[in-house]
Image (cartoon, rainbow, N blue to C red):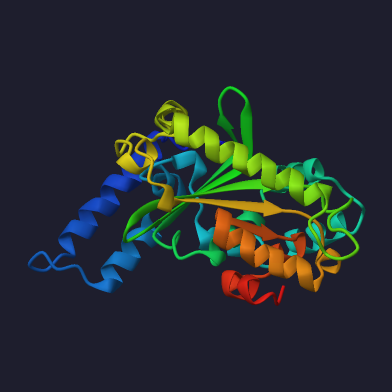
Amino acid sequence: MLYDRDYRKLTEEEVCVWKKVEELFNKSKRGGIISPAALHKYWDDLPLAVIHYKQLFPNNYIIPSQLRQKNGDASAVEKFKCLLNGNCTERSVLNFIKEEKAYDIVTSIFDAYRFGHHSSFVFREFELPPNYIADFLLVGKNSGGYEFIFVELESPYGQIVTKDGDFGNVIRKGIKQVMDWDSWLEKNYYSLRLVFEKHLGKMESLPKEFFELEKSRIHYVVIAGRRSDYKEKTYELRRRLLKSNNILLLHYDNLFKVGALLESTLLGEY
């Protein structure tokens, strides 16, 4: 769970408000046509808990506007920058995002892809049982259905690259981890249905994308080092890694960038 309460359970008051909002919404329809204003009012009037309840995974659902409001003063980002500048570890980063509920930091990765705008979910320390755990699994939906981003956090510091820009031990460790996940998914993807069902809400059944493997829906991200570590050759290897292995390599400073992240990565600008 990402939140302090279980959104799969509603209070009597929340259910009562929900029923009233539904009644008003149905009355606003004209010949089966719903105006944009009526639809906007419907979602504005629903209690936050009900919005979560209606989702595929209520306790993992991310509302972008809610994140923007929560971190509108950029305090979480500033704290994150201070953390990174303090010689932290990947565990420090994971704990920070969890404790601060700063999920906008990790959901910025969606900007590197063309899905997640219909709905998006975050799973923290997602199990690939019995031997693997992804630091984060991002699930996003577009018109073509759901797609998945498995995220591996590596250290912001250490042997990130060699003197000539080749991948160092830290990056190579992350790549190996992701390739192990890829092998596991090819053999065991159907078994993830049991993991997803633990988080499933009450409004929908599990779509087939969650238990029928289609590799075009699977993506991988490794985050390691800082911008200052990356050299010209590193960016070249990064572009090749994305093309050949479907692994997007990012440094931690990329997480401060919102929008056009993939294009910038391919061009080597970040």
